[in-house]
Length: 422
RNA sequence: GGAGGCGUGGCAGAGCGGUUGAAUGCACUGGUCUUGAAAACCAGCAAGGGUUUAUGCCCUUCAGAGGUUCGAAUCCUCUCGCCUCCGCCA
Image (tube, rainbow, N blue to C red; front, side, top):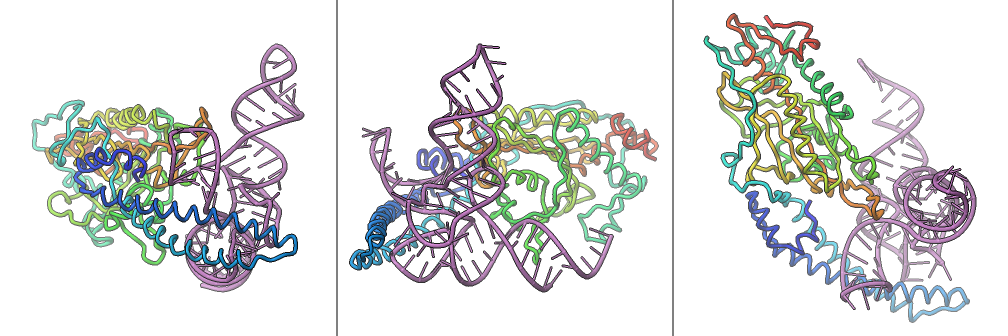
């Protein structure tokens, strides 16, 4: 949610910023509504002040045993007028609010201008592409020959897009989650959270999935709950409607959860195997920070996510998303992509975003500044650290051997209790 | 699924038609005292909005929405949320 005040003060700049995100919003309509709303509000205020004053006089007369029928009749009149105007005001307010809640966050000034993902900027490439002097297998083949993944039976259970991990595949998935959680807890001092996987609409609203992206999520009709598309949702809402102590900031949480996405409209090659699935696991990091610190924290968050990939020794790159590719709520975002030797393409395994006060406004997440004892919105950030399906693709494919086995990276061996699959 | 209870400021907790934006306590901030701290004492301390050059003035908000009334935290209706007990179940 953008601050209406900010829009009033700088409508042209905001309009431009929003346009850079590919969103056409007519701020003149919004400002006009705002102007009318405020005009009515002023009238209502004056009438109310009038009524409050006279009501007090009536009370005084009553206390001394008298009655002022004339004043009471007049105030009944005023009451009706207030009611009429108030209805108008409420109507304007609702219009303003529903216009405001679908306007995306504005990009930070440092974000490169661009139209779509082709304009994203590669800011870093780490490691090297693994070289093989034999024919390599892709993750589907490895998953099948090593009995790690069973997509046929998964489809029988839940339909396509729901992975079934079996045996060491299931163990590897569990090992990845435990390893990454432990890593963030121990090395980066995050506090561990295990959240609900279903959430109310209000929680989805905080993060920006609602009201615009309802179709992307699974929804339980009877209970009116959404299956979370990311742990960002429950974890960010931990502090919804709270006022935090400034001393408690920054708050860093890490959580693993299943993530559920309908992925409506995606089809074709991208949906093979683990490339794009309806349910997957992800270790997420969420930060609540002081506004002036949020861009430093974004660097930190990105470094924390990168550290995971580095510890696996996987080849990856960092993208700085351009304005056109930024998500609805984000002001700035870095993506991490690992290299898939068999697909011969980069696979997104993490997004690290600063939402500034956009989510905090929607979820009413504030802190009390110790300098002046006033409340202000915190800045929220989150990043995947990281999502498991594509990580598993990269690991299986990168560490396969000529005889069809897969070497387990050193850091995972204590979790897998083995050095090799197969 | 059945029955009941409860939603008031950062927290706890009074108030149950008119000087109540809200007692009191805790927390917090400033001051006095102290070598310093603690304690004690004094003072301050909600948020949102309108208006104003500014000091200020005004309005709204006691879960939310409606209703009764000249006037609602207080009475009525509905909705939402939380809690407890019983039933069912891992």
